[in-house]
Image 1: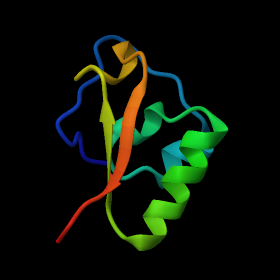
Image 2: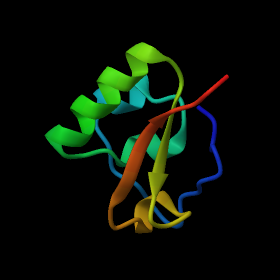
Image 3: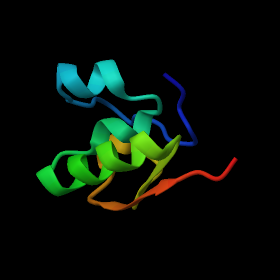
Image 4: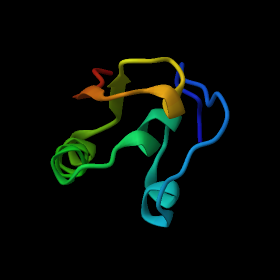
Length: 71
Protein backbone atom coordinates (compact mmCIF):
# COMPACT_ATOMS: atom_id res chain seq x y z
CA UNK A 1 0.00 0.00 0.00
CA UNK A 2 1.28 3.45 -0.95
CA UNK A 3 0.81 6.61 1.14
CA UNK A 4 -0.42 8.54 -1.91
CA UNK A 5 0.35 11.90 -0.27
CA UNK A 6 -1.47 11.08 2.96
CA UNK A 7 -0.23 10.13 6.41
CA UNK A 8 -1.54 8.68 9.69
CA UNK A 9 -1.11 11.00 12.69
CA UNK A 10 -1.71 8.54 15.53
CA UNK A 11 -3.94 5.56 14.66
CA UNK A 12 -6.50 4.47 12.12
CA UNK A 13 -9.27 1.89 12.33
CA UNK A 14 -10.54 0.15 9.23
CA UNK A 15 -12.13 -3.09 8.14
CA UNK A 16 -10.35 -6.18 6.84
CA UNK A 17 -12.23 -5.74 3.57
CA UNK A 18 -10.80 -2.26 3.02
CA UNK A 19 -7.33 -3.23 4.23
CA UNK A 20 -7.16 -6.05 1.68
CA UNK A 21 -8.41 -3.97 -1.25
CA UNK A 22 -6.99 -0.48 -0.71
CA UNK A 23 -4.08 0.57 -2.87
CA UNK A 24 -3.52 3.94 -1.17
CA UNK A 25 -3.79 5.02 2.44
CA UNK A 26 -6.65 7.49 1.85
CA UNK A 27 -8.90 4.65 0.66
CA UNK A 28 -8.96 3.29 4.21
CA UNK A 29 -10.97 6.36 5.28
CA UNK A 30 -14.04 5.43 3.20
CA UNK A 31 -16.81 4.50 5.59
CA UNK A 32 -20.32 5.27 4.34
CA UNK A 33 -22.23 3.03 1.96
CA UNK A 34 -22.35 5.82 -0.64
CA UNK A 35 -18.57 6.35 -0.51
CA UNK A 36 -17.90 2.62 -0.80
CA UNK A 37 -20.27 2.17 -3.75
CA UNK A 38 -18.75 5.16 -5.55
CA UNK A 39 -15.23 3.82 -4.87
CA UNK A 40 -16.08 0.30 -6.12
CA UNK A 41 -17.64 1.59 -9.33
CA UNK A 42 -14.71 3.87 -10.12
CA UNK A 43 -12.13 1.17 -9.29
CA UNK A 44 -13.64 -0.88 -12.11
CA UNK A 45 -12.70 1.95 -14.49
CA UNK A 46 -9.09 2.20 -13.31
CA UNK A 47 -6.88 3.66 -10.59
CA UNK A 48 -8.71 5.97 -8.19
CA UNK A 49 -7.64 8.93 -6.05
CA UNK A 50 -9.49 9.62 -2.80
CA UNK A 51 -9.42 13.27 -1.75
CA UNK A 52 -9.72 14.04 1.98
CA UNK A 53 -10.09 17.34 3.85
CA UNK A 54 -6.84 16.68 5.79
CA UNK A 55 -3.47 15.20 4.84
CA UNK A 56 -3.67 12.94 7.92
CA UNK A 57 -6.14 10.17 7.16
CA UNK A 58 -7.12 9.64 10.81
CA UNK A 59 -7.80 13.39 11.30
CA UNK A 60 -9.84 13.80 8.11
CA UNK A 61 -13.42 14.80 8.79
CA UNK A 62 -14.84 13.91 5.42
CA UNK A 63 -14.11 12.54 1.99
CA UNK A 64 -14.14 15.34 -0.59
CA UNK A 65 -14.29 13.03 -3.57
CA UNK A 66 -13.27 9.87 -5.35
CA UNK A 67 -11.86 10.39 -8.83
CA UNK A 68 -10.52 8.09 -11.53
CA UNK A 69 -6.92 9.08 -12.30
CA UNK A 70 -6.08 9.77 -15.92
CA UNK A 71 -3.11 7.84 -17.29
